[in-house]
Image (cartoon, rainbow, N blue to C red; front, side, top):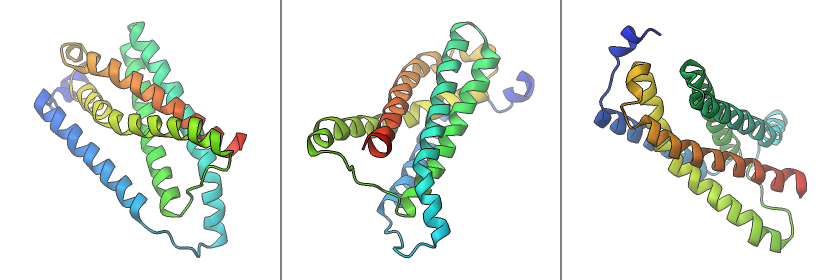
Length: 192
């Protein structure tokens, strides 16, 4: 999209913050709805098979998002703005796919209790899961703000916004969250 065309979509800081808050609230609402629903105990075998595969699919999507995120961070550090934009949009799209897969898995009853030893559960799994979930929640607003700002401003103007500063924080939190999410997958599905 050309800078001239995108300039018509320009939003101010206040609008970007409001839009980020609204989109974050919608994501939290969707997730809250999925987490509070009681799944049907009588799933057809085909659906049950899909639920079984979803944790691995989610881990793969998270790993791909992490790869795009880190490559996007490297691209902007090297001054490659177009590559940064593509990679960060890919990471954001992958997180949207993750959210859809995760909500589907939870809604269909694909939640799994930690099968490992109690000390590992208490001192490794639960702390890792807690930090992962907390960072996942905290990361949504700054990521959405940066996406909105990056998509609604010409590339030359983005630097004058809060995008670079917020982006550093968001990318750091997001990287840790994604990494811990992958660790949670390995603890639940590979190691135990």
